[in-house]
Length: 123
Image 1 (cartoon, rainbow, N blue to C red):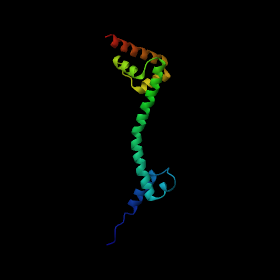
Image 2 (cartoon, one colour):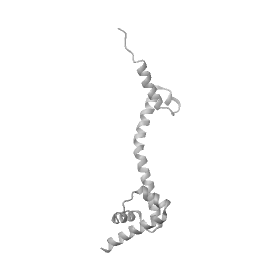
Image 3 (cartoon, one colour):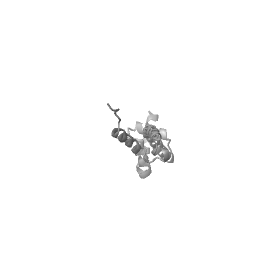
Image 4 (cartoon, rainbow, N blue to C red):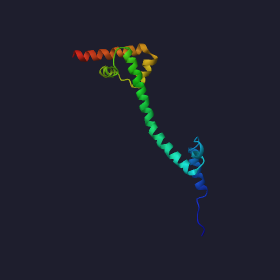
């Protein structure tokens, strides 16, 4: 009985790997072993960086809010604390957008946060 070989199945499997390696340069898209290494490493980076992107955006929003708050004479941490005391539930992304595109509304939000902080200190 002849030895069974994978044939078409192996070719299709390799084709899928080579498709994932598309866009790489040199051996990383032409040589089977280098393709495997590139695809595995690329998958590792993709998994890691899906989380890193979220972290980076949050840091950007905080930086923007902090700069806008400093212009209005309040620290970022005190602003966030004041918002919690005033029961204003806005996430950092929305606060950042408001600070950039609608400064008047951001002024009102800051005033409410300051008032809540003062009320807490008075109590």
